Each structure stands twice: as structure tokens, then as C-alpha cells.
Length: 114
Image (cartoon, rainbow, N blue to C red; front, side):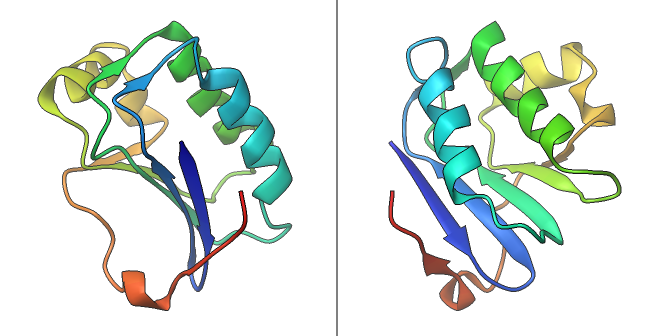
């Protein structure tokens, strides 16, 4: 469902679902709270598999933004055009960095238990 990987410099989250919606947003928030390190330089969320996002998924993303403090950047990566369009329509490009490609140096990240 979700993979959380820590490493320098990013805390990476892989959403391994085609939908990020009410069916899994609560679980996402709980798992984020359980795996989030105390000190974060940046957060990269990989949306490669996500094809649909609803208001619950967006609320879960905003929860991350509120949980960690500015100026810690939160990047949403590899969003499909429909998800990217929703995020841009909601002006979330002002809150998150929207990147079309996954982060580099993935081999440096170590998975955490979930």
C-alpha cells in the first residue's frame, strides 16, 4: 500500500495504489505519523501508480504539509496528467512542488518497516 524510505536528504513515500482516496487516506496518515522521522530535510512522495485522487487524498497531503514545518519542501513526483490537473486546479502547486520525474539516488534510501 505505502512504502516509507528514509535516507539522506529525503524522506520518501511511495504510494503503491492506483487510488489515493477515502479508502486509504486514513491509513496513509496513520502510517506517515508512525514512520516520519523527527528531522526531515525534504519529503518526496512518489505518485507513479496513482491514477485518481479525491478530497480525502488531498486532505492527507495537506496533513503532511501541516505536520512538518516550512521551509521543508514536499515534492509530489510522477503524477499522471489527471492527478496533476486536479492538484493544479486546486492551486496546490503553491503548497507542494510538482515534479514529473522520480527522485535520483534511490539506491541511497533504505526502506522502513510498514
